[in-house]
Amino acid sequence: MALLPIICYPDERLHTVAKPVTAVDARIQTLIADMLETMYESNGVGLAATQVDVHERVVVMDISEGRDAPLVLINPNMLWISPEKHLNEEGCLSVPGIYDGVQRHDAIKVEALDREGNARFIEADGLLSVCIQHEMDHLLGKVFVEYLSPLKRNRIKTKLLKAQREGRVAKLV
Ligand code: NI
Image (cartoon, rainbow, N blue to C red; front, side, top):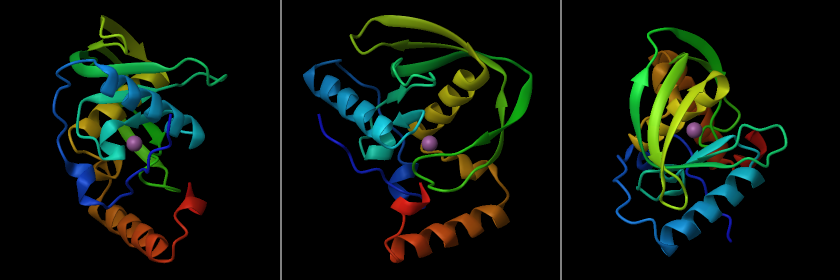
């Protein structure tokens, strides 16, 4: 396994639209193992392949307290979203040190392949629902700060570019 470098906002590569995985083979298994290791090492609850510069529809998550319940979604497809939404505080490993409120659907239903390539159906609410919506956005090239006002987004851009220039991004995570 290997730790993968995480792309930081406002890197343009974060806006790449990911392609479907065509085969859950050894290459994808290695990618998943590396993504999980990278997510755990960074203390994140979710990571999309887009964030490690692989533009295929793969996300990994773990919202458990014990950090021992990985969830892998390959080619996730949203089947249903609840009309009710609410505001949640979100952060992102690609936007280190920044947390802000985003409106997300309360509940969702998703179909996806698991890490063995088996079809799965997931009903989620609460944190898992928020996390899946956040990660699926990454696969469409969308970062959570794009839900914020242009003023806030520009402030975040300036702050992160300054941190990247000064080489202190790691300290913001
Ligand atoms: Ni994120």
